[in-house]
Image (cartoon, rainbow, N blue to C red; front, side):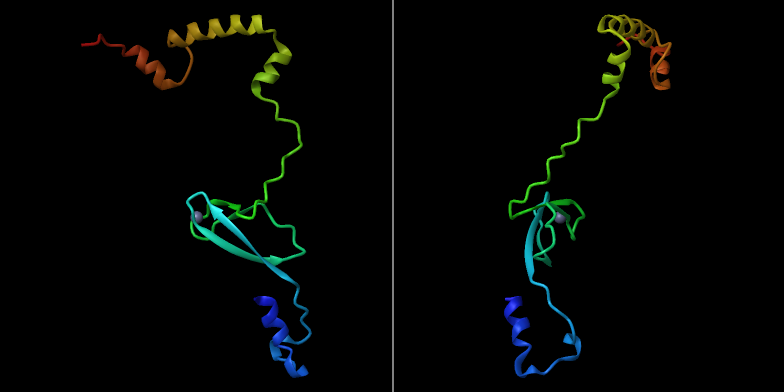
Length: 127
Ligand SMILES: [Zn+2]
């Protein structure tokens, strides 16, 4: 629809103020639907690389393309976790010992978040 309208505006070779010297790029409507079900369309140049996701204009949630454009699979290697880093320094056996030790301290209320300390200090008899 947009294309025909733009071409029609050139009738008679008369140039309109707002059209002067402007080359209209071909456009496309790309549909998106957010996780809450809001659907909307974004107009972009056909030359533009269509993003797989767009921010919903109504609720700001990330919206997926309804034209089946999938987010690019990231080829980068998975991030190293704390666990990975630990394994580089300690054997699993060592870690098990450390874990046991720490769990005992934790259960004894000697380490861990302050609210746990209080909880163990205040241990009341149930009933
Ligand atoms: Zn939304």
